[in-house]
Length: 187
Image (cartoon, rainbow, N blue to C red):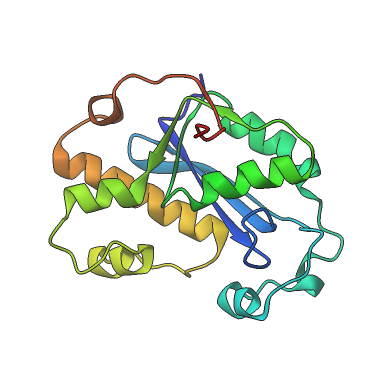
């Protein structure tokens, strides 16, 4: 088990394909505070869509010489294996699963997956929406949206605030950790 309470992951993609990861950021939290972080640009080995480039500012030039997904995966695995892993929606979970499949690699294993958007909706149902920029603005958290590490940091802070608001530990909120593969259930 990792020494962190939870890790938050966020990815940016090159185009509308979720498996086209071009940046990943991981923020580790202990006692409600970010205590470690890691980020990397990723060569998605795919074309970049104009919408995505405009959204996050990452282009083919930005990732020139960056490692491919298979090359960053060992560090991602080191940080996330058996950890409680969070992201703001399941987009990032699906993106990592698809990037692994595209690269012919097994999916990640982690302790449990935490959707911080779902937790924010349950904790603050009165808010106009539960998008990360909205939550950051309402709670006075400064950050640059659509940067993977910044999004991970803010989602982790939102989770810490939700736990504090509910006066609950992560285990009380979600139940005890279980080991899962990153795979989605098959229908």
